[in-house]
Length: 433
Image 1 (cartoon, rainbow, N blue to C red):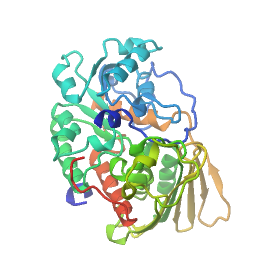
Image 2: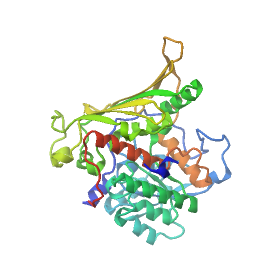
Image 3: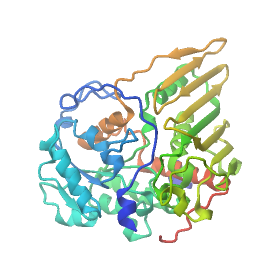
Image 4: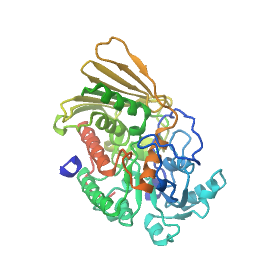
């Protein structure tokens, strides 16, 4: 990426989200009281008590939960003090209204009182009264229909930024060409500066206790990473959405899924991948999968040349001089993924094991033959910490713990496409779907 980043719609809209194995279910205290922020200063600024109106764009699983995954942004946000919900936007108005009706009957039902539903974000912007106008918007829709600068119908983030709204955007942040997303990121950055906005992206692994600990250990050791190995091995038999299996609707296995490890590698190394060094090979969709979801679901409806790879291995070098590799497979049965990151440097080895389910970190120190398991704080999950940081920034303007802003995520988006393209997958060409 250039200079700046270095310094049927209804069905698609409603079915945002991927199938991941469950996270470790961490016990959490009630969020109605004091916000105990994990990072930054220990004292809470007075503006942290400001009431915030929140809107959801997308009534699907990423914001409202699914049976098979840990994500559910609404259940985390409603536990936070001084938050109320003013809108749910989705072409499926019936589903959006059901979300409101169901949540209005829950323990935090008072926060959903008067929440309105709209078919699109334009209708929300036009109809919202001053009292109900959202301060912050959570965007959880398929990447095919947002994240554009050049196609007005997909310019959701641009429209909301011009309207002065803070945003937290789920990945993938787009399905447009990377160079267009780069230009969008620059425009959004300028608008964020002008209007004092927070435009963040949900790369939640940056708040994962194992990733946090690895980052802390690297600082403690004071030695640079020289090799990073990432292994992201996914189950496939419960992924029913046809869009997930379509490379140019979801981004494919690297841009849609392993992008979390691409981002973690950037975050932990503090360096960028060199595009010219990337080499990748893949096992394509011609390999039969024995437990594929039955027709008409999943891959069976996707054109062959747009189907995702079964396995991808990539190697590359970072600008820092370190080397790395990424192994993604779509081969596991059941529900549990296998995920692991290895970081090597002069005399040390840090293992980040199973960050999605049971996070653990192991360390072999310089001049040692032994590995020690490093204690982790598992008191709150990474999604909750991410929203604490986002809402604190919305209230106070302090973005010091917002760990992935849109322009940073645009770099991960681009880098993920580099790897996918090197493995022979198609890339966006700028045409409008």
